[in-house]
Image 1 (cartoon, rainbow, N blue to C red):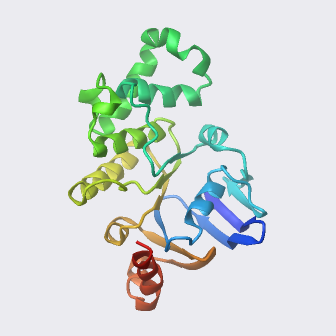
Image 2 (image 1 turned 90 degrees about the vertical axis):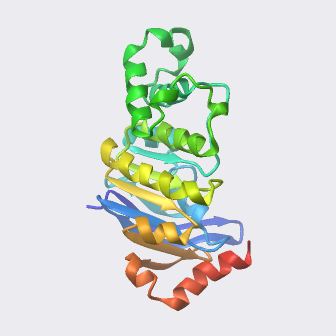
Image 3 (image 1 turned 180 degrees about the horizontal axis):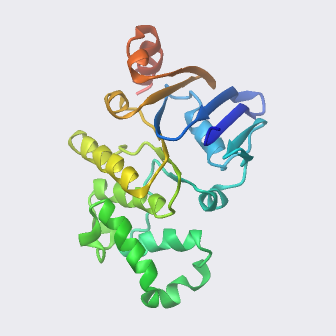
Length: 253
């Protein structure tokens, strides 16, 4: 059984068809890159997969159970988490507080978090454990606003990892990061996924060199439709397919 599945998913906004009949299955031990030119439907597809949007038609299933429109909080409790393209951290919180905030959101402790966090040794221990995976354990007391852009990105992703998901979806994990930092971020992510027991990882990514290097499977969308679902070697051996995906992206830059 697939761990995550979209079944003939469509999403319409009036007459505009953002997604059209997209059926995909995702399995354990996969790193799936979701690619496509601007306007391809990637964000809409991700929003449907992660419960932010309910599909107009079709179904999304996680472990065989429908999750269409359940919302990211419920989905996180079921075992799937998402880190967004734009860093979501609260700049005035410390690294430790940011990660703890994610942990308590999963454990329904948000109403008493601020008053007694100091006594929650278990939460602090969990935060330190997650921070260490991302090499942030030496900066637990740092205010998040003082971190580098790359560290802020890692902290945002660490907050998603703190939810102990089986499946994690990363929306442009290297956006806003310098070229020199990108591979370091990706290497950290891959190592973190293994340490955290992540079963399946989905990446929305524009950098095709990173897609080629780190993914085990590439899903390409164009104009709301599924264009390709291929292993990297087949995808990158198809010049026409690359022109459709990369060419349009460059033209819209």
